[in-house]
Image (cartoon, rainbow, N blue to C red):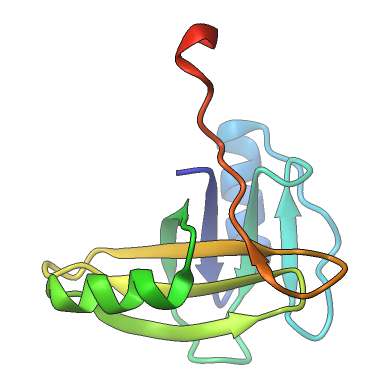
Length: 128
């Protein structure tokens, strides 16, 4: 797990709450996605008012292959909530586990070729 996201149809209320609770700062929303970075790039707040007005708080796990991870998750009983989105830099999707808990998966794309690349976020054992 290396990223989190909050989806909200009321971004100002969510920013006020989480900003006061955790002392987070929020970047200006990108357009047209209405997505604000939290504390630089530790997480994101997605304004869902123009979509389905859904609320969520999820974690993201980086995977080597988003499509293969979706296939495996579905074999294990997961459902796809938001199908794969390619924003040019990453590919990501939202899923729900068999009990309905929402989570995200993502993979980075090579900036030059647009080819998905896996970047490990794990520290070597010698660094622990």
